[in-house]
Length: 122
Image (tube, rainbow, N blue to C red):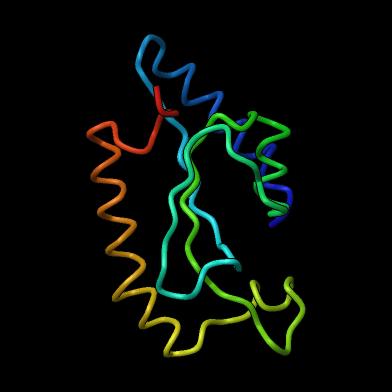
């Protein structure tokens, strides 16, 4: 999970080579423990990985020039971070993801197709 940079970098480079001259933007969806379940956060290009090891790995391979969509998973009071983010969702968490998070992500991606969120503010 924490070493996603190389495969994402390889796929991204291949994608860009397949569509030369086209405007492209990389968007990464990731778990975010600093956000409550059911919440979603968009972070523009060239923002920090904020300690997220998977994002750090991507930054090292492709750089920070991609948009991040953090999907809240919250923190556990009893499990270490790695165990928490790799554990199965409870039925309540699955409902929040299905009913709240996924529709938000869908809306954000629709906005991105219109150019919103993708590039740094001018």
